[in-house]
Length: 303
Image (cartoon, rainbow, N blue to C red; front, side, top):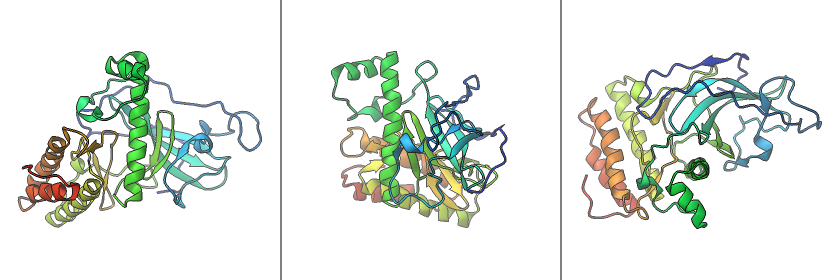
């Protein structure tokens, strides 16, 4: 997964996208004309930009051994993994020229003129900023407010992934955060083919039961932190060589602090449970719901 990629650009087919996504191919590739962090000279001799690692906020320690963190590393754009209304996900190769390389996923939240957030107030309960001007700007979706929201979503996802990864929950490793760009572990093969979403798979009975067990463990890990995914479906779960991984977590919901928390939990379980029981009626989403309620310290709720 972390071998050097050929330097070619491609667009990745995404036939199993969900209804949150749409295509916006008119935006230019993000490039930086930064100086060489090692020599102080101009832009990189190859690739699209110098690595953003030096100036970014880093993910939890220990840093994975496969990650390239050298000051002289260069990022090369290899294609688009996913487009959506709120963010696009790009495939990057980060490499030291003639040295080690790794593949990364760069999730870039949209600029104000292109973004159309579908997240509603259900997710934003409890997410407030200290300055009333900023709160009003976000509430009224001004250009300034939308930029603040983009930063909030990127920061919220980075923080949630860091906490979950440190707790052993199956999520991509959050490499770094730089403004509204979130760099993540790429889940896929060495050729740059992304791991399929659960919705695109056709599991056998034994595979599905194993995946349901893994899903259960991941959701219990969230519940132990007092959280639920908030937008869980078969489109927000990857199957990476048989390993279930939760993705797309900017809207993670506090089950206790958010007054809608229990309702969101019900919805998460029903969505993923409905997909699973349609393929194996021996799976029991209601039992999962009650386990999650117990782990999160909720009471008096029924699925």
